[in-house]
Amino acid sequence: MATTENLTISRIGNAETVILHFGYWPSFHDATLERISLSVCSSKSTVTFLIETAEFINELDEQGQYKQFRPCSIELQFKNVKDTFLTFDHTPVLFEVEFEQADNAINCSFSSSAGSHSIVAEQITVLSLTPTKQ
Image (cartoon, rainbow, N blue to C red; front, side, top):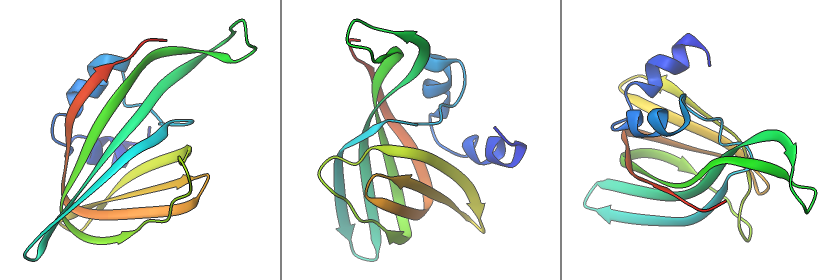
């Protein structure tokens, strides 16, 4: 992970929960976006994602799939959303998720099976991390 991204990750509230689970901030490659919630209250919007993710090891299981390492559900909340561009298909599979500083906000950009997306928010928080079965 690049140093500038490390600084941006450190701005994410409760990011240490994810880092403790994996030992690092994950790439979210092959994660699925399971739920999106949108709340609009006056001029402040909040978007919450539930992401099913894991890291993979270079070993195959009985079905010929790569074995998962520490699978979990992560709930990310984007508060005071300034800008969004979101398009989705059935259950989007994430390819890459990047976080970068955008003035006094954080830009989260990601590519998925449904295309490219972005959310710019003043605050991002990890609401929860729930380990799941492999």
